[in-house]
Length: 124
Image (cartoon, rainbow, N blue to C red):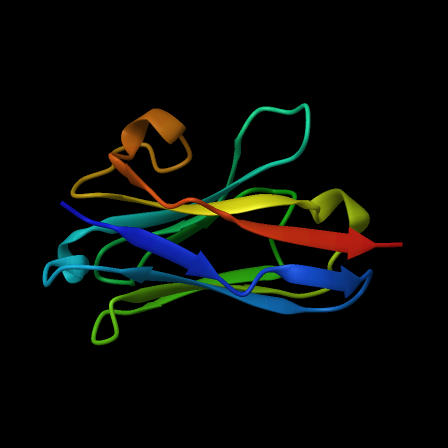
């Protein structure tokens, strides 16, 4: 069982930056693949970024590639999403997700555990 708690969301102007954190409970965080997803009002949840348990492999949605960076600190049981050059279309609730072995890391149904999410609002 893993519990995930996101933090770091807020209101930022276009072009600004935010860093989201996702803190995980338990002693086996390093054995979980981790992902970040987002959901805007009236839209389906979509993939943002993911990182393998070792931290050696990362994946990004085309819409955020070059602007967002996912990383993890297994000693702190935390995964991060550094977001730069934010755009109004990045406005959404951002959630982190965990799974012992996510095969297709861009798919929401690959993840067993989900956090409650943190709101990110980018003003124009």
